[in-house]
Length: 131
Image (cartoon, rainbow, N blue to C red; front, top):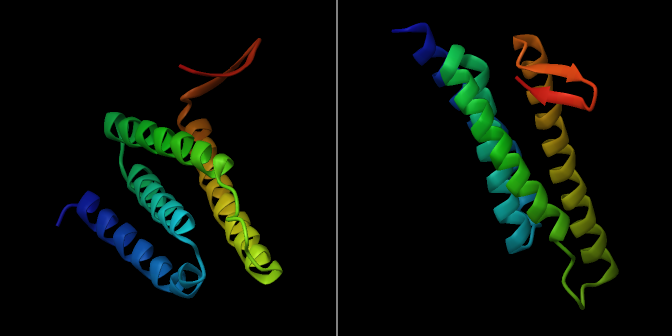
C-alpha cells in the first residue's frame, strides 16, 4: 500500500474512535448542536487528511478546512439556547456549546501551526497574510 493510503486509514480510524467517545455528549445536544458537532468532526477529518497530504493537495485540503471552520464559526456565533429551557438544560446547552468552541479553536490552532511550519504564512505590516 502507498504511505498516503495508510496515513488516510489511520486518520479515519482516529476520527472514528473520537466519534465513539463523543456519543454520550451528542445525546444531550439539541438538533442545532448535533449538526454543529457533525460539522466540527468533518472539519477535523479534513484537517487530518491535510496533515497527511503533501504539496498542492495539502494546500487544497487546508483551504477546504479553513472554509469549513469559517462557515461553522459563523453558525456557532449565531446559536442561542432555546427559550423555555430549565436552568439545568440551559447549563448543559452552554457546556456543549463551549466544548464545540474549544474543539474548533484547537483545530484552528493546529491549522495555524501547520501553515507556519510549511511557510504558507508570512508576517507583513498588517499581520498575517497568505503567500
